[in-house]
Length: 399
Image (tube, rainbow, N blue to C red):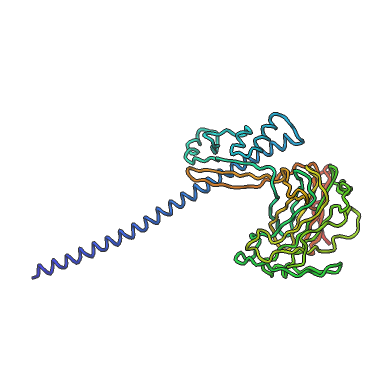
C-alpha cells in the first residue's frame, strides 16, 4: 500500500514537470516569434531606407545634369554636348543620366558606391544599392511649394509660350490646424475702403483651419538691372502691381485684374483687399482658395517677370499656373523641373518625386530690403573695406 502511494506521488510530480516544461516552451517560442518578427521588420525598414537613399542619389545626379546643362547650354547653345544633354532630358526615358554621359550603368542600373577604394567594395556589394530609373521633366505644368507666415517666395514667371493670366491656389490639407476636421472657417467680405482694420493673429488663428491672407506682387522688367523694374512693361495698360487676397465665404472673386502700374515715387500703397471665394471644406479639394489674375500678355521665354507671394497669419502651401485665355494652360520653362527617381536596395524598391529650382536670370531680385516684427527698433552697422579693423565700430547703440 505504501509503495502504491509513493508511485502516485511520483506520477503527479512528473505530470507537473511536463506541464511546466510545456508552458516554458510555449513562452520561449512566443518570445522567439516576436524577436524574429521584430528582426524582419528592422531589416525591411533598413532596406526600405537604403532604397530611399538610392532614389535620392538619383535625384542628386539629376541635379548635376541640370546644373551642367543650365551653365553650359543657356542662351540656345547648340554644341554636340548640349544637344546630347537636351535630347536625354527631353526623352522622358529611365536612362536619362546614362544617355547624357553623366554616369555609367551596369545591367540597366547605376550602382551606388560610397568610395572608389577597394577597401569599401565588399561593404558596397553587401548593401547592393542602385537607382534603376531616373526621369527628368524640365517643363512643368505648375510651380508648387510652401511658405511660412511672414516669409516670401519669388517665382519666375517664364513660360514655354506667351501667357496673360496667372492662377494662384493656396491652403492645402497639410495646412489644416485640425487634420481630422477638413471644414474651413471663413469670414464674410470685410469692410473695404481706406479705413479698414485687420484681425489680430490670435483672433485669426483661433478660428479653425482659416487660410492665410495672401499678398501677391507681380514684378516685371525689360532690362537686366533693378532700375528697369520702373520702366513701362511692354506697353501693357494694366501694368504690374500687387494685391491682397482675403479668403471669404462667398460673393468673392474668381478672376481679378491688377490695378494700374506703380513705380518708385508713387504715393500710397495697396489700400484695399481683393476678396476671394474659398471652399469651406477640403474633403474633396486639394486647395481651399483659388484666384485667376489677368496681367496682360507676357512673351514666351521671358526671364524678367516674377511673382512674389507672402502669406500672413499662417503658413500655406501653394500652386501657381500660367494660363492664356485662348490656348489654356502654359508650361513653365525649366523653372521647377520634376525628377522621378526609383532606388533599390537588395529586393526593396522606393520611388520619389522631387521638384528642383534653378535661378538662371541675370536680373537679381531681392526678397526685401528690411523686415521687422512688432515694435522692434532698427540698428544698422556700416563698414568700409579700406578701413582697418581697429577703426571700425561694430557696436550699435539704440537710444
